[in-house]
Image (tube, rainbow, N blue to C red; front, side, top):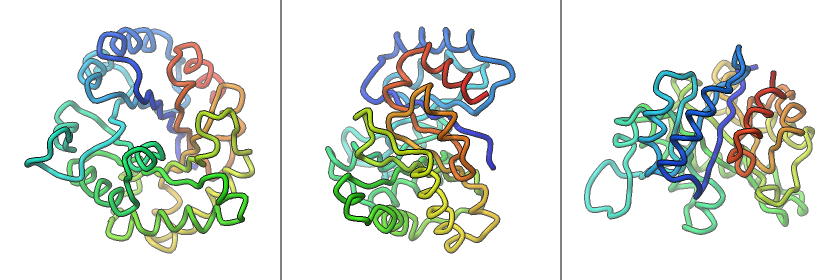
Length: 251
């Protein structure tokens, strides 16, 4: 089982000044030893402030999106190379909110994964189903179908070069959480897909996260499963006490 990754997705919260203060306080409260890798996924404008505040700490940082383009006439886009220049480690790709509000497809996600990898970023590829799909008994086929399209032209020479986050849409910000059994069942299915695509050795080491109403009181049960290697955390990532409590729970 891979070392857990606690990926903190701030979404549209915390500008540069608040991000810097938050990060400085976090560094002072990190448990030793640190029970998981920690990454803060911030709005683009706050990334440099995080880089400055977290530079000498074990905490890494990353973006919530990345352009599929390297450069050119793409107003409003931020390239993977630009993110790498400020030492981002991760880029979230295909989050359900990007899909819902910006019309991003699995094909778009695949192009962004490749762009991130070319620049040396680790993509956190998000997949997951809506409630009607789960109730229809198609959660697994839908989610694996998303992976199939997004990873169709993606090579994974090192399993550390890819993270996959299973985020059932019906559990994001709703207070409803998939059970540890639900998360593990999907983890097993995704691991099986990766085995068929990249081989057993790579499949065993790619980190699989669960995202969807993760909190201090459920993170240990979720991440205690064999095929859940960490969590993509939204709302509970905003409060410092909550983040410290999640790290304590993982320990």
